[in-house]
Image 1: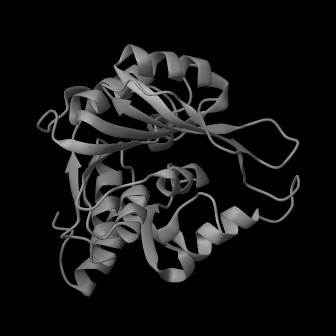
Image 2: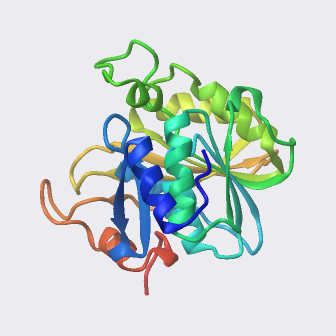
Length: 263
């Protein structure tokens, strides 16, 4: 199916592949995702805001899903060139529609493939971004729908598979940006070092002040020997169940600036 065509073709494709359109950042981005099953979450936006790129860097989005991370990075860094790798056909089709609708065909390049057998040249990316599944197989409640199951649990690719693919894709000195559940923080840090990926920045994500961390964001350097800087916590809400935190509101208003200290 050709996903890159006229507005009429876009609407026909939208109907055929069973996806819907979601507006982000006041309509500055339009993201397509399946109507049922997998749907992108706040974690994807968090890692997209955590990334720091330089100039015309080549970026690999591992397990790109419907393309939300790639689209946000293209908005934040217009000079970057992003390869979005995804294995599930329905998500690749949604990704193609996201690229088309946001006029990103010259900057975001969808590729269908298995990260366990990386269909890309090794060592040619300055940055890799990953939002891997958080749950090992048969861990806790298993999502009933297939695309959701594959995106949320390590059925197709484990943490080790993601890290091995990232290290293979990165140049020495390149950076991996990743989000994961805080419950597996010790495991992830150990696996990063085992794969020659040195953690350089670490930020814990809390639902609100006074609540334990739910996620963490990490930047790791391929072949690095640097110390780890633990950044101030990122709070999602001002209070439990309350409004979004000022930092999150600022990101939603000015996504180009990402997360970080403000004047």
